[in-house]
Structure formats: C-alpha cells, structure tokens
Length: 446
Ligand code: HEM
Image (cartoon, rainbow, N blue to C red; front, side, top):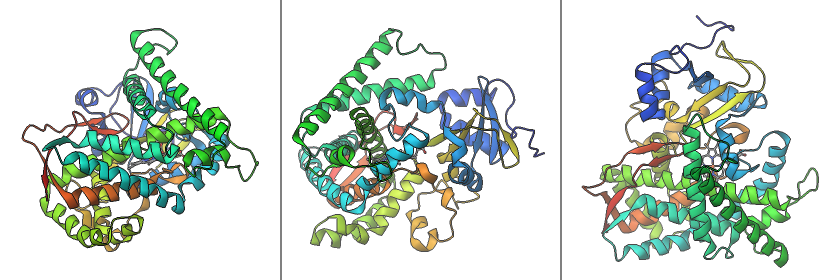
C-alpha cells in the first residue's frame, strides 16, 4: 500500500535485524542491494532509530538530486568529512556553496583540462619508466600515487615539491580515521583526546598548515602560474565581485586533493582488474590505441578513443568509485507516494542503481559496448551516476575522464597487467569503493 502517511516498505525494527544485520557489518553496499531487491525500488528502514529511505528508481533519484534539490542538504554522514574539508565544495551548503561553485567552475573548463592533460602525460612517463625494472606491481598503489601527483600539480603547478608526500600521507591517515568514525556509531567528539582523535587532529593540523604555507607563498608571489590555485585565489565572483578568503581557499584545495585523486584512482584500479579478467576486451582497447600512439598521445587523442572511454565507464558501472550518496530533506517530503520526514536520510545507492535489472541487461556482465552512442541512446540519465547528478554533480568529471582515458590507453599500449596467483581482490566499501588489500599484478611488456 502506498500512502503519504506511511514509510516505504522495509525490514522492521530499530536496526535491520536478522540476515540484514550480518550483511551490514560485512558489506554495507550489499545491504542496500538486498533491501531494495527484497522490498522494491523505494525501501525504508531504521539504523539505530535514524530513518533511512533507499531509492533506486531513476525517476525518484532525479527528483531528489535535481528537481527538488533545494529541499535537500547533504546527510549527516558528510559531517565527518567536514573535519578535513571544512566548508569546501563537497561539504558546504546553500548560498555559500553556490558562490564557491560559481567561482570554481571556470577552473574546469576545456582550456584548463587541456593543460592538465600535459601534467598527466608527464606523470604517465614516470610510471612507465618505473615499470621497466619491475615484474610485479600493486596497481592500486600506482594509481593512487599518479592521481595524487596529477591533482597536486594541477593545483600548484610546481610549488608542492617534497611537501606532496607529507600532505599525501596526512590526507591518507585522516581519511582512514574519518572513515572509521563514519562506521562507528558512538564516538567521542574530536576535542576529546583519545589516541585516535589525537592522531586525526595531528594529521589534519599537518595538512592544513602546509596548505596555509602554500597559500601564503602564492599571495606573496602574486600568481601568474595559470594553475588551479591561481583560479581559486584571484577569480572574482561574477555576482558579488568578491574573491575567496585564505581559509576558503584552503578548504577547496583540500577538497580537490581528496575528491580528485582517490576516486579516479579507484576507477582505474578496477578497470585494470576487469581487463585482466577479460583479455579480449583489453586487446580491443589496444587495437584502438595503436594508431593513436603513432601520432602521439595528447588531449586531442581523446576523441579517437571512444572504446577506451567506454571501458572506463563500464568499470565505473560495476565498481562505482563513490558507491553511495546521501541527502537529508529540509522539510517533510513525499517520494514515490511514501513519507520521507525532514532530517531523515535519503540514500541514493549508486551501486544498486548500476545493477538494476530494470535498466541494465545482464547487469553483472562486463560489456563496454553498452556505452557506445547507439546503445546509450534513450537511457534514463539518472540510471548511471558515477559522478552524481543535479546541481551537485562532480565538478571534476571531465578532468577525471581525460586523466583516466590517457592513463589507461598508455599503460595498455605498453603492458599486459594480469592478476598474480597471490592476488586476493576484495572490495572495501566505505566512502569510496577501494580494493581492500590493493591489487597485485604481474607486468608483461607488449
Ligand atoms: C572517477 C573520478 C571521480 C568520481 C567517480 C567522482 C564522483 C563524484 C560524485 C559521485 C560526486 C557527488 C557527491 C554528492 O552528490 O554527494 C562528486 C562531487 C565532487 N567531486 Fe568528484 N569524482 C571524481 C573525480 C573528481 C575530480 C578529479 C575532482 C577535482 C579535481 C573532483 C571534485 C569533486 C568536487 C569538488 C565535488 C563536489 C561538487 C559540489 O558539490 O559542487 N572529483 N564527485
């Protein structure tokens, strides 16, 4: 029965009981999949008294993320990220977010992405060089390093130097500890000096003070580097004429560093994993890349690499780098005829949507052709959401696709990467969908 006075159907109780409780502990991503499979495309349950409505129907998803987005803020889960990212684009709201987005948007226009492509190509060369003396590598480690360096250089052109490693380590530590906090229901406030809180506070302090230093240096030098930092520092808001303060710049820098590397890295790692299981598809990528390589890989090659791009899109369908996004209604709402109270959580489980039999034929299969122009025609825009949707769609989506396509094309052209017999690949869905213990692969020069 659908009535505006009822929550959507779902498992009863204060916490998903029985089989759901076990699944939640082992694999929260699977929990959302099961609940929507068992109760339908809109399902609702309580996690320790917090009402969660999980939606997978693209029509409902579009309603929440786009049509009625002004009634939604990000959910409480994002509060933990604020410890690291403050009021950056990912975590801010309302008119403040709008202004920050307006100022930042031009930094991701085509001419900027073309410049970032040069950085990507330089860094690919270094990875390929490092492979010359190796027979085994952890591809997820390699991708994490290259994507971090690329976004670091996009931000700071050349100022980062050895500070990159310190900031990178502190970012990794703080993200891990914040992810633990997200999964722990009862936790001490950060001001309480538990050993974990102290470690997290130290990591956050290290990151912030280093970025502050970089901002100060740039203010002194007066800019002119043409990188993201120049954009953040000197672009005036077209509506108010204001520029960002130093602390706003710092929050955006940390947001770009975090949001801009781990996601792209995961997309690539899972792509290499899938290609090692499907050598026929890897050969097709290689065939497409071969003629492009003869004239030299660059930004303008991207239009000649549609299949390579489709492979990445399909990998992100099966392993969405961000597997869930969440919102919270400001005022009571009705979705699909069911009650969704203000302050509750609406979960858009990207992973479940990407595997919905109503929208995808053979959803578990790896078939990049789904994304060619012919097969994509007529697909509901909100049935494929690796970059989210609506006004809060990822600002770095074109950057990420450029980077991932160039890296994949280049590595596949030179190497076959295959899982080693010791590789035990498991997924670790926390905020992002990482491989749990990396992905060990053997390297064979082609
Ligand atoms: C494959 C790579 C990437 C994936 C899968 C990805 C995914 C996403 C998703 C799903 C969101 C929406 C979150 C929500 O609605 O709650 C998002 C937002 C965002 N992403 Fe990405 N992202 C990627 C790469 C990047 C890159 C390269 C950058 C920047 C250099 C970036 C910066 C951001 C920022 C700043 C936001 C917040 C935008 C806003 O709310 O205005 N992302 N991303």
